[in-house]
Length: 196
Image (cartoon, rainbow, N blue to C red; front, side):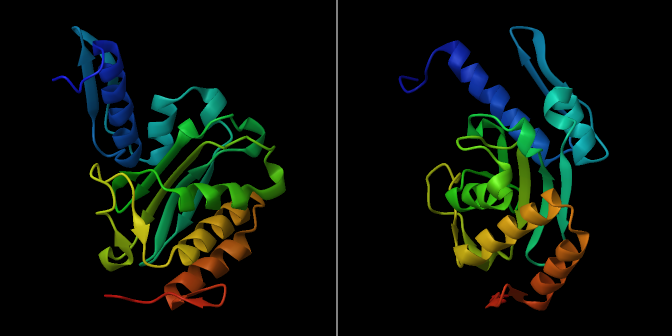
């Protein structure tokens, strides 16, 4: 008990964690009650965009663009408009194989994908869910399991950066080409090692 912070701080952490889980799992209902009051009450939603509209103000969700790269090295989620970017990474919702993570490679790739569209020191709203074979990622890096180590972080960086760039530039042909490359086992000349 001596490691716990003030009641308000701990309950804020609980609500933030529930929100992050709710973003990752729109098909699950979430309810958080604090001191007898509903702080968070989210029904099951059909898709991610519906869940985001239930969680965040329109100013955040109105300009988001969907991301979808199917395959063994799959990427899904949304990226916010660079014009609506904020001064912190607080609105980065990152998941690897359904696990909440804080990963510098993924964050840097988002920034790189936004490129010159993003003002210095600004960060877009981003929800990215990366699906990988379990051998391609080590989740035992941090006791809280919030940090990961990729077997090939350069490939992950390129996958995310190029996907974000294609989505923001609305280059559907690039996105289809990237999805085909990932499924074929190559991203920008790099071979994705199938470890399964």
